[in-house]
Image (cartoon, rainbow, N blue to C red; front, side, top):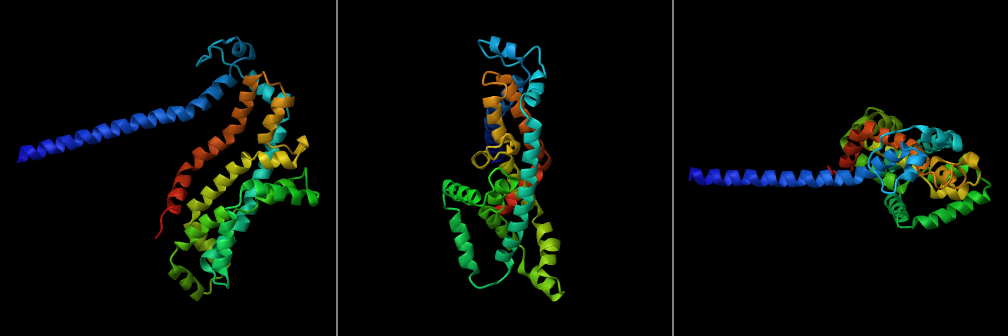
Length: 289
């Protein structure tokens, strides 16, 4: 009997090892598939223009890396200006959005007022509207207000998000009602309860929302392209198109890749620094308690 159980245990361990091995192999393969474009982008950015054009068959390494493409990326077009514009747009938009969605999520999660459920349902219904229709409406509104080619025109349509209000409201709703009742008994105001209790508890989710919004703003392309035709207000995303059209030409792929590397680095660093907070916020958003 003991030998029978030993055989079952050994077979079970073998199956677990096989499953673990297959899982790691598949994950490794998938990681290589995902990371390869970034490697190719970085590799191309350090190849000289002549070396790149001399390659009839693309090579996976270079014996003579160079940084001249990065110099061309900043000298061929005002890439530093695009960076500054994107930084202003991202910081201001994210700050204004948080100032809007945090009180809104708190109101839907904790406050009681007539028609709350109906208003929240209407908010959620807005998520069903195609983004193209919203862009058309926003474009007409911003144009009528005379805000084209301005930071106000870039920022205003992005200062709220129904999805982020919903996500934060779900997190706020998980906080026990007893905490709110005890705070009110102690004379704590709603604003103080929000900032001293709810926001610290939901900090991972708030950080996740901030990071996602930063990425969204940094990568924004369609709206800035529609609302601005003045290079003084170009962001890094539509600045890439300007680089391609009027910078160092369509043929200088290494310089293009260098510009893309420079633009991608801030987002990569941001994710690496806050990756644990992002994972914690995402996992918390899926837990009901």
